[in-house]
Image (tube, rainbow, N blue to C red; front, top):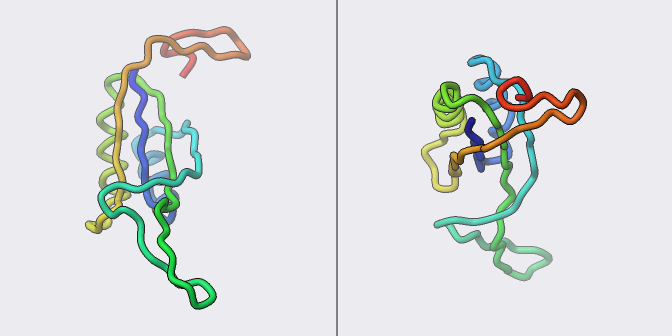
Length: 112
């Protein structure tokens, strides 16, 4: 099994969710996060004073799925989250050794 972590722009969440549903992926965890990459934030003016916003709001998606479906999820996220502008985000893929569904005790692929 694989865990796909995607960091995307907040306004792209609905597009990504719809794209994942279109390829049959519905279960995910969504978290509001803050961070920065190459763009290193930006400056804003508040009450006449300029200040730097180091951490930009982002959305983190976490999806655990079978190895065979991971690439479908990655392709769907890339296609739906891409704006061709800096800060579009990143996708991280890692291996998951075990999954257990708390309610039933199912393990492995059946638990996902």
